Image (cartoon, rainbow, N blue to C red; front, side):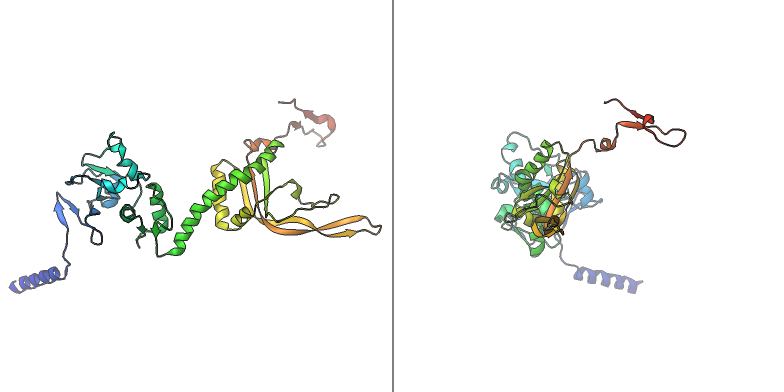
Length: 346
């Protein structure tokens, strides 16, 4: 028994020696740990709310179980993803156009922003505490360094939520390709919205003024010319297409990711039956074939690969297949003219 007790004591002392020193301390059955090892204590002091349900459950439900902490003059506490961040109000005042700048600006004087019973301001949004901890650096030095455990898209969503500009000046990331891809998504949306307003909507309006409820738009470059033969035009329906000349739009739609984003924006605007791609479009006459008597019998056209957009804004497309007559089958099985009954107009 004495040997067993000595062995147990030896194991306990060895484990205690191997364990790193901890900065955790217990407060009313809730464990908090400082996370400012690599952060200036004067800038941000964070504490992890590690409840029985875990940090995620704590953030999802409430922070009522977190014991209030003392805050110095000019400090506020925010709870994001189960972590409590003690911050200086003056940090947010430097950027009044951000969400936190608006929360803790003049709105605090009018009591539009209020804490809970523990004195915490709870950010009830799906933002991880690691992403928010990186965002706080924006208020210190104007830059956000993407942590290795936070994806660039997650950081981008967090910046959009807190109204922080997501640019190559404000965000620094080791994965440059992913950062540029997120910037492309952001730029492509604003770019296509400009194309939609200035180029595509006028083309669709021309179709609507002719009574059409759908449009086939072909995007050509500004240097492309369309010269068709008057007697034998293209026979594949290209004459019904709306042609727009915009070299920037042609370059924009050559990327598959841009076309997918453009299709999503058109769906958000209520348009339907959207098809996008790249197809050959006849631009000018390449060759003319004449018959034995010299008459024109065939015309070959030069085709250029150009992007196209097909879409519809018809509201009652299911009724377009309705036919305003009733065909009654006779007993003999043969349909004759007197068996067709015409319905009165609606």
